[in-house]
Image (tube, rainbow, N blue to C red; front, side, top):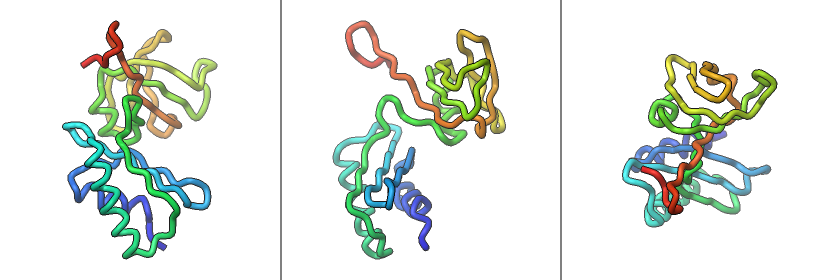
Length: 151
């Protein structure tokens, strides 16, 4: 059996993109691939990656109904230590595996990551969480007063 996520990672990174996230629907009928690149992802990038993945899936005899390739969006997921390091200073929404001070959801500023410990600051103060304690982390999009994205 092929490790599908590893295969997708190999193809995407070989094309110069970062695999941000990979989702498989129940029964593996829909494959969702979220890619990023420093300059930003274009529609043409998504089409190019999709075409390449379709060719690889055909060769590897991967059975699926639909492949979706897109950018991670403004509220991109943070999974890997390098994701947390890249977005230090950003607002994040954390969903914790176990409650901390009575909460499983926490909005905070990302202060840094060292080893496998993520440091954040919220209205509850500064705290560190092990990556294993975080179920899901996403960027919180920041907009200026005119509806545009802050730089």
